[in-house]
Image: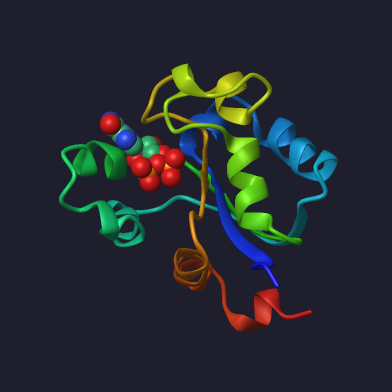
Length: 140
Ligand code: GDP
């Protein structure tokens, strides 16, 4: 069966632009079930740990500075094919290339400040969920 859990983050730009409600509403409309949720302000070090896979990319410092610039909302979502379904709802990384109706097309302002993160594969979902949530948070 396709993976039934993924990790999503409403990034600091989404929180500052008051898109929390819009994004949660879209999740509910698309039957992406919220399993766990918390709001926090990452340190630079915590953002670097989360995005460690990108540490050799030229935008790593800028990305982790942005991700630690304000509060974020972190959620575990559930449902059949949830990884793919969330990625479709998010749209392409660069909002200029994102399809109409996607969250990034609607709310993102740049390739970096693109309002939402979603895990891209089952292995990354497992790592990313465990980065923020314990077993107790997501059981049942
Ligand atoms: P995603 O899976 O669509 O989020 O994209 P990636 O995993 O490739 O990149 C992670 C995050 O890094 C993106 O969501 C953006 O916030 C940022 N990012 C990706 N590409 C670029 C880039 O070319 N320049 C900058 N400044 N940020 C980028």
